[in-house]
Every structure is written in C-alpha cells, then in structure tokens.
Length: 312
Image (cartoon, rainbow, N blue to C red; front, side):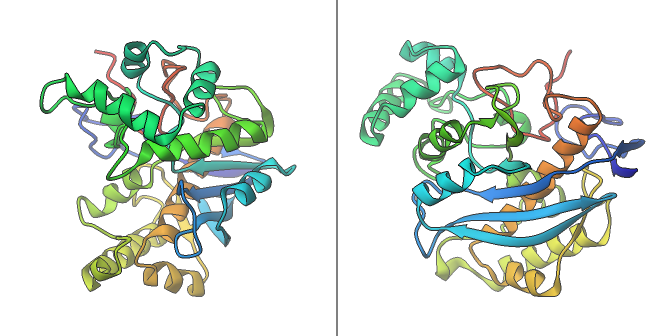
C-alpha cells in the first residue's frame, strides 16, 4: 500500500489566518490515476500556451512525468474530451460569487448559471460587472466567493489584473463539453476528474509574498528566478515543506526548465499537480469531494487545499 501524508485543513494552534498545520497520520492509498496540473490561459498563443503537467504518485512523492502545451482552446478541449483516467488540478475559477449571481438575477443552479454566463460576450460581461461595482463602496467593489479569503485568490468576477473572469468564461465550457466529473458541482465521467486549484496558495507557504514570475520579459529578474529555485528546492527536499505533506521529484532537465521559465507557467502547472495529488489522496480515503469542505457552496465551488472556513 502507498501512503500520502497530511490534511491541510487539520490545524494546530491556528487562529484561522492560514498558519501552517501540523502533519497528521499517513493516508493509506492503493490505486492512483494519472495526475494533471493545468496552468490555464483564456487566450492561448504560441508565446503563452496552456501548460499541462503530467505526473504520478509514489508513496508521498509526486513525480513529474512531462509537460504538454496547447496553443488553441479547441485543441485543449479535444484533449480533455479524450477517454482517460486522470485527476487534474486546474488554475481557473469554477464558479461565480453567489452575491453577484443573485444581484444580476441569474440562475442559482450551477449548470444553468454556467450556461447563462457562457452566453454573454466579454464586452457584455464587462459592462454588467462594471455596473455592479459602480454603486458599491470603495474597498468593497467586487463580490467574492467564500473560498477567496482562505485561498487568498482574486474574485472570479475580476476582468483585469488578473482577468480570471475570462478564464472561467473560456475554460468552463471546455470542461463541461468534455463531460468530466466536477466534484461538488456536476456529475460526470469519474475517470476524468477536474478540481479547482490555485498555485499561489501553495507557493506562499514557502515564499511568503516573494514574487516568482512575470509575463513581462523586462520583469523576469534574477530575484524572481531565485524565488523559483528556492521554491523548487523546498518542494523537492522534504514532504514537510508544505501542509500537503508531499515531496516533488523532477528530472534535472525539468528542474532547469522550470527555473528558467520566467513566466512561471511550468512552475504553476507543477504546483497544481501537487494539489491534485493531495485531492486524490483524500478521495482514496473515502472522501467523494476530494478534500473540499462538506459545506462548499454548490454554486460557487471551492479552491482545493484552501483552509476550511471557521465553524465558530
């Protein structure tokens, strides 16, 4: 039997603000599908493709087996629709804030909401979101999902810096058309499981607020390269480097490629892969939600490995 360690939601001496949790008893698992980590972009190009990391779990070690790149949404959608046996972490939002949906009078059932959302153009959505924000006070312009605070993520209605609203608009129709299983949101092919992940959540456990990437070549500095190297060193050296209790194993060539990739896309895909590995471990222990809290809002979704909301 193989083992996976640590529940990042079980915490020692925690006041609810994201301190590192203690590692717990091993999780015993026996069967592993292929693991995927996806660094998604809503407008892929040859310079900025969708990056997919592939790997597998051996004990508490996650091995990276390679990377694939997609320069067109249609090609990525076709890949998702292929028969397979995988659990993947996708760096894109899987839902909208309930507060926003209610204010706009949109359907509150997830599938209907996503279909409704996909029916708008980006300019139409931008206008709706700007109107929503216009009448709200400074500091509270945007609506947020319950997961955003614990994960430290941007709201899924944000259309700039970063444009995560367009990631949802471009990516979710592909996942839905492919018929994949979306735990807590939509039943699908349980041999292909898609989970929402956020690489920044895992990176911050090691780097704090140090920046490790930029899409602007002029900002791809030596300091950011050092941050990527430090993060890789920590993840590869010990399963206790983060709350997930997993160690990363990379071929030397991939380590160099990730360190040299100033955009951080290869690293982000790898971090999503690690988060997917943790989720698969929870499923193997009998959790059909892959480690998401049982109180997850079925309209909003949840970012995997984000600390559970306080019950008090």
